[in-house]
Length: 356
Image (tube, rainbow, N blue to C red; front, side, top):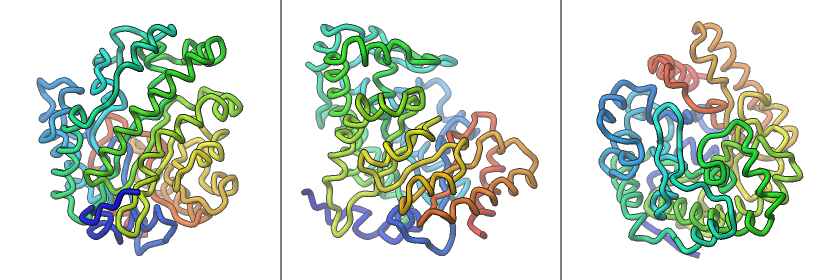
């Protein structure tokens, strides 16, 4: 076990409301942050990103620091989420990938065969490649002080879906086909992705992140049986490097979130996390009944951000009420902030949540 005595989690952020909630304690106010709070809904972000490609921005420590801090300054949220993209570790490992505006991540060469996977497995994510990530986290934690930084990574299945499909897909059929038609190739691919994801998360936490969240954006397309057999072991392996760390007297809180994963909540918790994120489809009291004793995060419907304030406020109150069924609750959206969201709505919502 590693011990990192000067890490924020051993001092500055140990008693932060978010960390206390992640550890199962109710605090003086409802801790809140928003998925995708750092980025596209903020005019200051759009101004800063002008002329810079997304993945280039993600590898510039100064840009990452400023973008990550923008919503903390503006909204007064209880945590920063590391500004990155799920395909950043692939880029760092030398995989040809770019983010095409209006489409999303696109691979130079889709990974479809045993030879494709064997070529991937010759790559690894070394400390030198991770240096800009570590540098950005170190800069951020100096600026954030007592506000925790949450580390971020895409889960192996979601990364595999992009790799096999070659880009975005509605049903991830090619990835699900490989799972069954080429199970050994699938296992090799997922094993490599678990190693890369684990290294990416571990670098963020060692550099100063106080928690880590694994996003499995596309796991909801899977049956429960397929998730347990073909995906869960690799999510568990990806989280292991963080779960093995000790920061003073603390373990590092871990969060798992997926979209459309109401049928997978217990299986997602069983990969070994402290907190389960819930999307807008599943009421938090129902999630709490399925996950007794587990801290929950969520789950304001992002569509409500465009509603009139009384409608949004009533919906948020319903979320708070349902969240009381869990031992602790971190307020968030049931997915990311839509790009067209008025930032003033998020600022107003944060202030209202803190008063409840």
